[in-house]
Length: 121
Image (cartoon, rainbow, N blue to C red; front, side):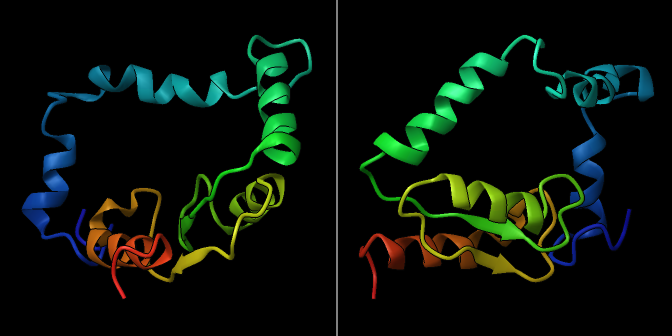
């Protein structure tokens, strides 16, 4: 487990697995990839298309996105594509050593977001 995230200690890394006594308790996590919509007739496709349409054309708000450059699930290419869908989305905050769970880099991400929203200089 050491090395999964450079900012985590070994006990912290083990804490991610703590609620699961054995692999049988991770069935939901293992099932999740099968739930990703890959065909036009799958449940959720229509609402996802409406969300893309809204974010691309009707969205009037501000946005902020951070991406872990080592995220094996939603890495840079997926996030760049998503950024292109969101109207007016600024450049991504890239966390070079960041993985899928950027909360481990909470300080830098939170500070960048606060600067973006104008809450700190």
